[in-house]
Amino acid sequence: MKFAVLQFFSWPERRVDLATVYARALQRIEIMDRNAYDAVWLAEHHFSSFSVCPSVHMVGVLAAARTHRLRIGTGVSLAPFYHPLRLAEEVALLDQLSGGRVNWGAGRGFARVEFEAFGVPPDQSTARFHETVEIVLKAWTDERLTFAGEHFRFEDIEVLPKPAQRPHPPVWVAASSEAAIEWAADRGFSILMDPHSAATEIGHKRRFYDWRLTAAGFSATGRDIPVARLMALATTAAEAAAVARNGARWIVDSYLGAQHRPVMSNFTPEGVDPVQRYLDEVILHGTPEAVTEHILRLRDEIRLDYLLCAPLSHETFMLLTEKVLPRLA
Image (cartoon, rainbow, N blue to C red; front, side):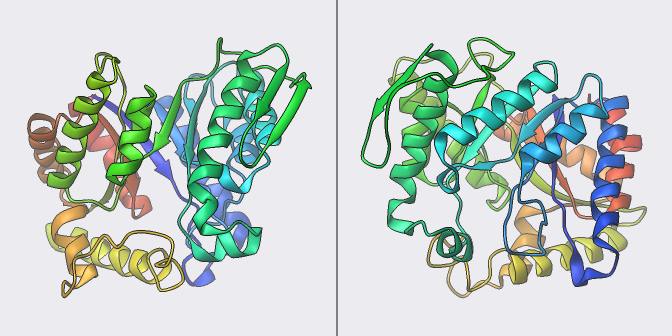
């Protein structure tokens, strides 16, 4: 089983200096590089203290400079908010500066405030996302780029630099809905699986993806399919549950609040308390021993072979590193 961290840059209640948020995250990344983690995936968000990282590519350069073997993932580059040629350049530059260690994850985005502030109509986001992914890949692989689409047109442009990894860095697309999974599988893309669905839902989505991928003529063999799981660890189950509940409230208030709902699907069924749902069905929480056993069950039940951990506290990260990874990596 591979392990990675989905690194948020949360600034809860702005309790510390903002520079401390970045310093702590970079310290964690150095620890990951010395331990059994495969990658760090950097989360991009805008206009919210939930995660104050508007450029995963800039932070990725810092992460690459402080590490030697850790792969640097974008979790994700919010593709509709970029000019596609600029996005191709930035990720290729990061791949060059990291010595070919980039995992490129691309996503559509979901927060209404981001679409409004960047002037991207939500009803155009899917088409812009699809075109942008196609353009980035062509920019990396074609000597000179020509493209004609609904939103972008380019004629005979040399896009430099090309990435260090040839023909290009490995690519994942964030896919939660059935339509997104279909689009990714039909084109042979690997997917990043979301941190908001219950494990049973993730298992269903993974089986659907594998079926659709095979139907499209691609093989699922040998693919890394990271499954993001929110995680709260502590020395007692009660302490871990308290961390998990606080994390669930933070997510519901800051991440799935009313400002996002017009653009994204609602992960919580009608009439269900979303905080309790996260606590009961989504967040892995408990002692290191209990969570280790839970992960082993998920490995068997939903073919969990790449765990993308989203720690809800620094204690969780350290216990994960010191107590869980040695047993499972």
